Length: 413
Image 1: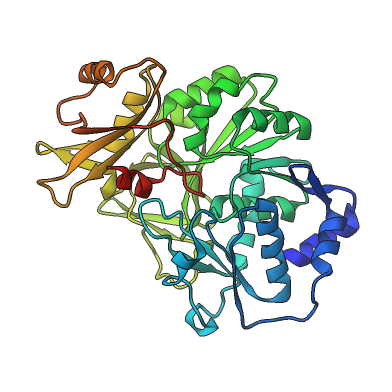
Image 2: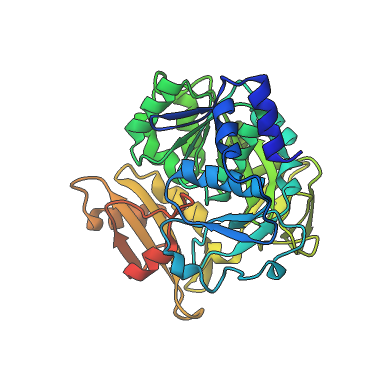
């Protein structure tokens, strides 16, 4: 069933139920459907419609209006000038797959974002499974932060509307404001990337954390962060899923399973088949973008337990220094346990194996010197793991997807 037909159904069944909340604006399902119906009823089926807007509510309304009209919407990352998309956006409908209903972007964490095209069914087929796994329903109130150009936000936003629940959108970069919204809106579910979870911890209390369920997507979830959330919020359930813009949902697990097995990303979602070839993960799934040859790999490596997948990262997650390889996510987890460090990221620079080296990007607590941190690192990192360069920052830069912006960090070197 198309999303517009589903919204029409909810507008009849529960007209006064709040569908979307954003700032001081709330739209019931009746109001949402009336707003979408107030536009032109004439279908336009031969048009690609980029959406370049910084407001999540307007992004979503424009996206839904395009689907209603039959155009092919694509929400652009608002922080990137529209002119920068000239080389990656198609100019003619013939340049996109025939079955495509809308476009999505990769995060562009390490370079230019990629455009992928999806059939509506590639997401809607997973809605019932996502409902089951993440405990979403018409009674849930889901909090999402940031731009809907981030595929994870858009997917879960549409899932929540499909299920008839309430979607709470937020653009305020204030953790205190988030906790106030959670309490005011009685939020039950949070979708947040790991890049926010450590920084959010000082604001999380039994009172402020109204959500019973925390959904996060990660290729590597630090165990210490999970332990702290479980300690602070005894009734909290944490769901971790592994996926990609091209693949959508691949696997999922309960956060407590990660405490027992480092690097675990769990069992496949329904109808997802995984194979390992020389350690590389290949996916065959009905949830993938158009135009891929199946099975498909995004370059991630892994290994199986008896029934679950452990993620081993990608080639770019390793650094080779002094002839020895080190895994960046494990290195970051080690360093992040130092109380002198607020936040950090690690990246590899260098044109070849000779020049390749590690750069550590650090946000330090007040009155903490880099010299003292270097001495501490000698006690927890081997010589091959120690960075050759450091970059001190007030905060880590994040892109519109809520991920560390490595492209920007590289420009600072």
